[in-house]
Image 1 (tube, rainbow, N blue to C red):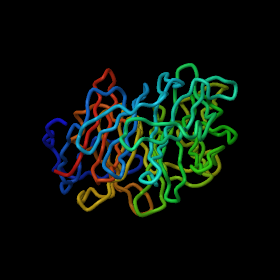
Image 2: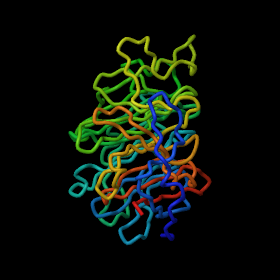
Image 3: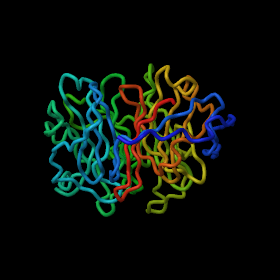
Image 4: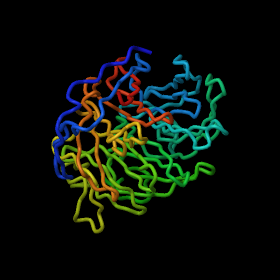
Length: 374
C-alpha cells in the first residue's frame, strides 16, 4: 500500500446551487464539506470494473479483460484462480459487474456479469450472470450457476453498450443493469433483456423480471440506505447522461429507432412516450459519461453523509449529488480530491464505511483507491 495522498486544495470552496437541467457538473463542494484522504490500495491494474468488500474486510475486484484479485485485510493482494476461458471481451464488454451475496459470510457466494463467447441461444456471444463460490483463503473461485441468468444480448461486433452492473435490492433480489447494444429497437422491446433494469431471485435464476425499460446503457445501481429507493445511472448520447429513480414497470423513454437506424439525436427521455419517467438528474450537453454510483453512509462522513456519488468517464473524477427525501436533486458538485486520478469506473462504499474507487484509464495505469474523511 502506498503513502496516503494529501487532500487537494479547494475542499472549502463555496456552495453553488444546482437544478436537474443544469450542466455545471464542475461546481466546487460546499464550504462545510469535510476534506478527504485518498490512499492507493492497489496499482498496476488494467480497466478494473467493480469492487466489493467482504465482512472480513477483504476486497474483491475484477478487470474487464478477465481476472479476479483479492486484497486481504493485512494489505497483501493475490490472484483468485478462476476460469474465464469463455470470456467475450470486446470493446465495452468483458468481465464487468461483481457483487457479493448478502449471506456471503455463510455461503461464500458472489456473482459476476460478463460476456460469454458461447452464451447466445444460437451458440454465439451473449452476456451472462454467473454465480461463484470462493475458497476460505481467497485462492480460487468455482462456478456454481453457469449461468444464473443467460442470453442477455450483446453487441457482437464491437461490444458497445454492454451495461452489466449488479447490486442487491433491500428484499435480497439481484438487480441487473443492461445496455441496449446500440440496437434501436431493444430499449422499448419488453421481449428483449437489453436496455433494461432486471430483477432475479438469486436462489433460482432463470429469466429475470423487467423492472424498468427504455434505458440506453445502465452502468450504475445504488440502493439508498435506510430506504427502498433504487437509483440507476446510465450513459447517454451527446444530449444527456441520467440518474433515474427505479419504478417497477417504468418506461424511461429512450427510443432511438429513428429512420430504421440507431438514432442518437433523440432525447434520452422522450416525453412524447405516454408515461415516460423523467430523470432525477441530467447532465445536459456536454455529457460526462456517468458510470458506477454509490451512497455515502455513516456519521464519519459528516455533512457528506447521504450524497450519491457518480463515477465520471468522459471527464475526470467523481460527481456528488445531494437529493431530498423523495429523490429530487438539491445540488451537485465535484469531489476535488479525486480529480487527479482520471476516469473513474466505480465508486463503492465498503462494509468498513470507507469509499473504494476503481479508475479506468487503461494500459496498466489503473488503481484501486480508498477514500476516507481526512
